[in-house]
Length: 273
Ligand SMILES: [Zn+2]
Image (cartoon, rainbow, N blue to C red; front, side, top):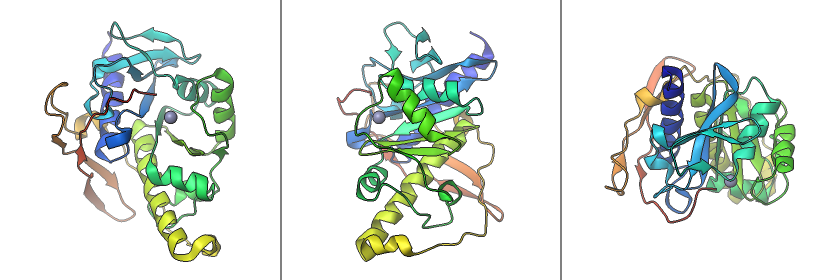
C-alpha cells in the first residue's frame, strides 16, 4: 500500500481515537460514530471506520481497522472480515456532492442531540466555535439512522455550504478541508450545544432572543492528528486506561495547548452504526 494510503488510514484512525478522548464517543456511545477522510489522489475514495470488529470502540481504532470505500458507499478495500459502517452513506453522499469536503465526522453527542430535539437550533454562546453557528445550522428532521442512498443524499443536500448539520434525536455531522477541522468542529459543536442547554435551563426559550456578538475569528491550524495524539494500548487489553490526547490549535491571539479531556475507555458491546 502506498505511503499516501497509509497516511490517510493513520489520520482517520487517530481522528476516531481523538473523538473518544474528547468525550464524543465514550460510555454508552463508545462505538457510535465514525470519522473519514478522502484520499487526496483518489477523490472518489475515502477511508472510514468500518464494523465487525471484536471491539467496536472508537477509542481503540488503529490504521488497519479502517476500510476504503467509494463515493457510492461500496467497500473497496480493508482488512479481511471488516465491512463498511452501516451509515457509510453519510460519508459517501457528502463526498460525492461536495468536492471541497475532505473529511467528515459523525458522532452522537449528548447535548447536540438534546438541543436538536428541544429547539432544533443552536445559537453561538461562546466565541470558540461561534463561526460555525454564524448561520442557523441545517437539520435533518427525521429521527433515524442514515442507511439508504436517498437518506444520505437528503443529508448531503441539506448540508449545503454549511460546515455541519444536526440530525434530530440522533447526532450531528461536521465537515472540513482537513480531518482536524471536522474533529474540532464537532468538539466545538457539542460545547456550544451544552452552553445552549444551560441557557435554555436558565431562561427557557427566551434565551434565543439573546445575541452574542463575536468580533474575533478563531481558527484551527494545521494539525496532524496521528502525530499529536498518543495511541491507545493494544486492542483487547487495558480498556480502562486513560488516553492522554493532546491537541494544539491556534487561538485568536497567540498559541496555547489544550489538553483534551481524558477519555476513559469502556467499550460497550453495542455495535458500530
Ligand atoms: Zn449515527
